[in-house]
Amino acid sequence: MQKILNVSAIKDGTVIDHISPDVLFKVISILKLDLCRDMVTIGNNLESKQVGKKGIIKIENRFFEDHEVDRIALIAPQAKLNIIKDYKVVDKRSVSIPTEIDAIAKCFNPKCITNFEDVTTHFAVVSKKPLALKCRYCEKITFGDQLELK
Image (cartoon, rainbow, N blue to C red; front, top):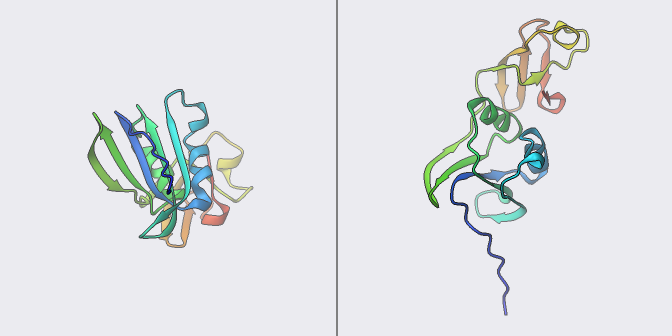
């Protein structure tokens, strides 16, 4: 007898699907889902026909702002968002890395003015794959493995 685990649907909220399993908990952290009071369902290493293994997060009563979607895109560029209203998917879209990143990433250069004065960070995305961000102030390149979000 095969056992199947059913995960309940959410009435209103967001499903973040196709998250790479190695960054699932980083997405949870940057969205501060540990502080969320509504239902959050997390699945990791789920089988996927498209990518082999994937992670998924269902968050009830939460809809993300553009700057939060940009944060997701920087960590999980292959993720897809499903917006749920009254148990139905009303919008489905892929996240995409914007051409400019403002105020959400830190410059890796410890001597950059953004790391010791109250200055908002600004980066131009010079490469999406692999991720490379050029700081407007010190012009150093922060690569994906150096990326730290605020």
